[in-house]
Amino acid sequence: MTTTDTFETLKSRVSRSLVGFTDDFPDDQSRYDIPSSKPDSREFPVPELVLFMMRNVMEWQWSGTGEKVRWTVYGSFKGFPVFFEHRKFGFAIGMKGGDAKDRQRLINQLKNALRHVETFLAPIAKHQVSLGQASIANRYSEFESRYRFFRENADKAYAKASRKPRKSRPKPSGENEGKSDKDLVTDFVSDMTAGMNRMFMANQEGFYYSTAMVDAYFSLLEHRLVLLRAFTGKPLAEGELLEFLGGKWDVKLNQIVSDAALSGAHLGKMRDIKERIRNPFAHGGFENDGGSIFFHMPNVGAIPTNFSRFGNSVRFSFIPIEQADHAELCAIFDGLDELLTTGALERPHRLMDAGVDPAYDQFYIKKIHAAVAGSDEDMEDFLERWSREWMMHANMDY
Image (cartoon, rainbow, N blue to C red; front, side):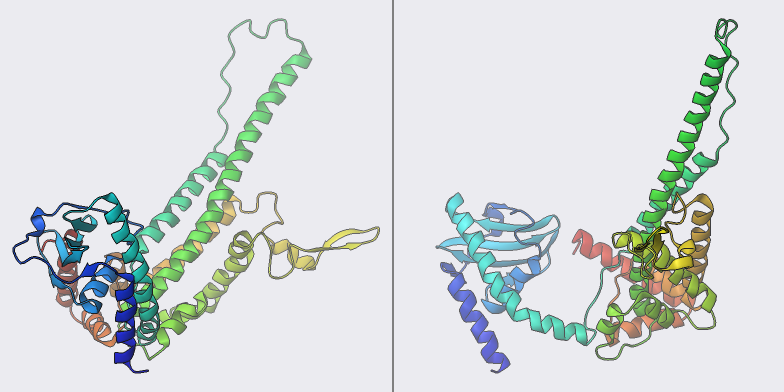
C-alpha cells in the first residue's frame, strides 16, 4: 500500500466518523460572533491533532497566529458554523446554533475520529524518533527541586536528632517536696526516655527523607544525562536516540563524562548506592545479592544468603540510613554534580539549567554545537533567542 493510499484510507475513515461535518464556513461570518467555550482539557489533551485532522486530512480552511491564538480551523457541523481554536488558555470550540446535545455529539465524533489519526501517525512517530527527529521536554528544574526538597528536609531532621537536649529548668522550690526517691528516679527516667524518643523519631524522619533523596537523585541523573546528550552538540547516528534512552544510567554517564574526569572509584560508589540503597527501597526491599533472603539452619537460626556481605546491607543498622551515611551520600552526589557542571560540560549545563528543550535532529545539534563550541557571545545570543521565542509561544504573543 502506498503512502497516498494510506492517507486516503485515513481520510475515508475520518470522514465516516465525522458525520455532519462539512468544510463550508460562511464568508460573511466572523468567529468573534460565534459563542465558544473550552471542553475539559482531558477531552483533547493534544489540540495539534485536531489541527492536523481538520486542516490536513479534512482540508478545512484555517488561519494562523493571532492575538493570544496559535491557530483556528473553520467549517460547519449540521449546518451550524463552527471553529476549533488553540488559545493561550487552552483548546476552544465555537459553534453558532444547536443545543447542548449537538455540542456533545460534536465532541464525541471528534474524539472517535482522532483514534484513526493516532493509529495512522503511530508508525510515523516511531520512525521519526528512530531518526532523531524528536525533542524531549526539559524537566531539569522539577527533578532538581524534588531532590533538593528531600535533601534539605533530611538535613534538618538529622540536625534535630543530633541536637543536645535542653537542660531541664530548675523546678520551683517545693515542687519536689514530699516526693520519694523512687518518684524522683521515675521522673528522671521519663525525661530521658522522652529525649531518646525525640532523637529516634528525628533520625527516622531523616532516614525517610534521605531514602527519598537518593531515589530523586537517580531520577534527576537519568533525566539530565538525556538532556546533556543533545547539549554536548555531538551528532546522533540513526537509532542512537532510542538506544541511549534505553541504556543504563552508568552507560549514559560514561558517554557524557570523559574517562579522564570520571574515576572508577566515583562510578563504583554510585553503583554501590544504587545496589545498596536505591534499588532495595524502590523494589520492595529486595537486594540483588540475596541480603533480603534468609535460609534456616536447624538449631542455629536464620542466615542471610549473602552471608557476611550482609554487613554492607542497608538493613544491617536499626536506622538504615544514619546521619553519617546521609552526609556521605550527599558528598558523593556533590562530587558527581561537579563533574556534570564544569569543564567541557559547563556550557551544556547552562543550556539545561536555562530550561532549553533539546531536540536530537542533525540541524538542531549543529546549532547547539555552534553555541557550545563558540564564544561567550555565541552562547548568550543562543539563550537570548531561545528565551524570546519561548516567551512568544508560551504567551502566544504573535
